[in-house]
Length: 303
Image 1: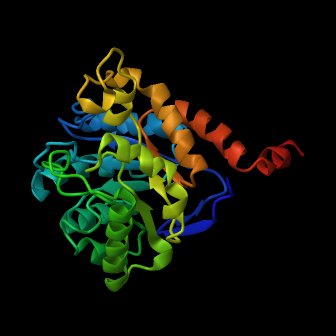
Image 2: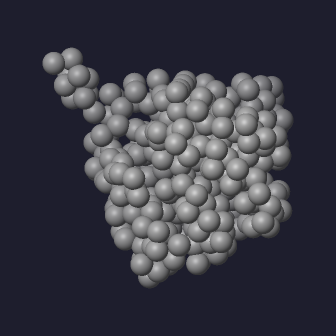
């Protein structure tokens, strides 16, 4: 293990330092059909209450998404996405002290959302769905998260998986970075995400976790989203069936400790940001993992 490289993201309202400690990105889905919490926070008042609760629990960033991209999902139009998203962003103005990231694949949504207070754009398609999204990030001067996804949400877990997952992810991320840079996004404003669970097999998700330091060599901060993912549920499956071959996964509510293990692995592998649902619990996990990664931090705190 080696200490993470320090990066600084420039937001409209300030600067985020990455690498001194792991930052927690709290997930808020204002959707009826997300895999983990679909329907729970669709009503704006419930979404606002949850956003404030995530901040109180220790989130450093709030990631708000209004379109489900779970496996098999077909997507929604920009008008519907904005109908769900804007009331929440508007209600959070002046109430939330942490920056908001908007989880969207659409340039039109990103443009309006950043005008309504979002300070980071999180594109799970890595600019493959709508390359114009990079232009919005450049014009608004906000950080851009580029995730690797093989295929589309509707088909990503049914199409053939890559023979060499690291080669596939590295090649895809390099292509996304090039699109962003060509559109004018500063190198210092780009974050990369290997896309755990997005078009990867059971074994490939673990291989990516094991080989994160190789992705860190690309020279960009790393974001990892393992929280409550299906591969963790299958890992915990009991019985004689092989977890990687179709056994019924463990329910979402029983995946918290598996998530904790994956978050720890992510941090020790070099992740700067972890995207999680259970913020309070993962804040404790991240604190311990940070000390494992950088023991001097504990010594400095005690002085």
